[in-house]
Image 1 (cartoon, rainbow, N blue to C red):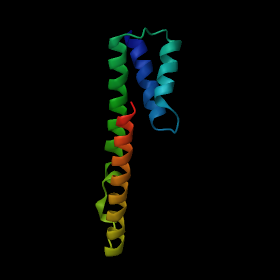
Image 2 (image 1 turned 90 degrees about the vertical axis):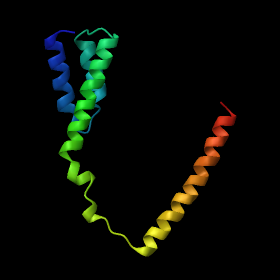
Image 3 (image 1 turned 180 degrees about the horizontal axis):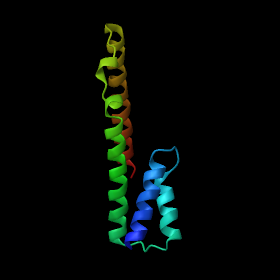
Image 4 (image 1 turned 60 degrees about the vertical axis):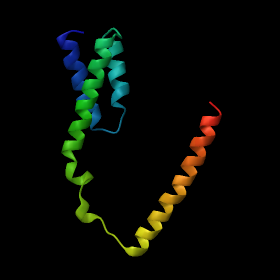
Length: 103
């Protein structure tokens, strides 16, 4: 992969990460159009580019993701929520055990 190809791939990832389309799909298409070989370095490069894009989204929306001041708790709601977790745990354990029995 040349420096120009890596810059183009980075631009494609940067543009497509913030719009509701598949950034990974567009990176794959760009790699095919640029005739970039599918070797270990390029795979690691692609993962690093995507990790950087994901981290930038987390940093950009940090307050929106972790704004605990907007959470509202009520006694009835929390009791209902705890019972939902218990039921879902039972369902997950049954499904997990049945999927292990039949590989």
